[in-house]
Image (cartoon, rainbow, N blue to C red; front, side, top):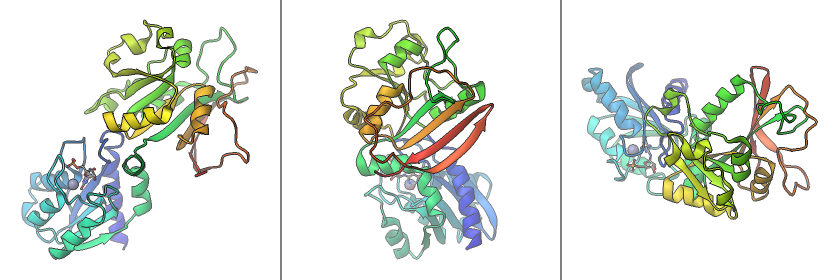
Length: 344
Ligand code: AOF
Ligand code: ZN
């Protein structure tokens, strides 16, 4: 139904506000509607705080729409939860408010909820429609789904290269290949994740900050964990920004040897659901060989370096590694290509 899609799109807009902020919960949005009028809207802000449905109900009450809630429809991007977690079940809130219809986009992959809302709400006489804009909604919760189903986080490998596909500029020319617009986009990428992983070699060579600088990104959240993977912690420069700046408590040094275990630990111990890999070719190559990378974001700068360092130094692939869901975007005079690593 066209109206269902329209309102689900509104709910997805709300969900988007929580992108990167809600782990170990998914970003979720909700809109409550009656007779074509929006009564309230809300999004899940942070694990431990109210879910999107309860935010939308509270918003409707704030707007003086309490009376109208009875018989209204709620659009949610995720199946409403039906068991007690850190917060009370959303289906209870929906039933208490007297809503008549629930439309949701994607089923909750959490086994505690998956599919249960249809039974609980159906038994209470609430009409349930699921699968509206499901594909799009699923994309937004990819990190949550992957972590929930496999115990591993969603990994985005970010790289920046010259037109001759090299990582470094000629010696003595400063270190930036890409322009300020691309670097601003990297801030947005960092805001999608809860951890940024790099190598000891990159820390020594570039002394990166790997932080979120824009205050709007930091509202209600902290800068992502900054994880340095190295076999040789003593070789790290103690005066590098990662160890001296205001976020130094958000820096972790871990062994390099077993990246899969390191990623599992980040999920389990720190509730991380998505990771940005910002490193040189060796580390990126070994992670790619190990099948740990889900998405690639590559910036290409209009410069030829004739340099030596390639962005990906792994074992290589017999038949190449196909990428899909490709998106191109221009940032200043750079080009960005973002794509998903197709299943191998
Ligand atoms: C919803 N609406 O906005 C979100 C949901 O510990 P809790 O109570 O926050 O519950 C966490 C689980 O709730 C999480 O694992 C996922 O299954 C679901 N997230 N559900 O109805 C929401 N964020
Ligand atoms: Zn809920």
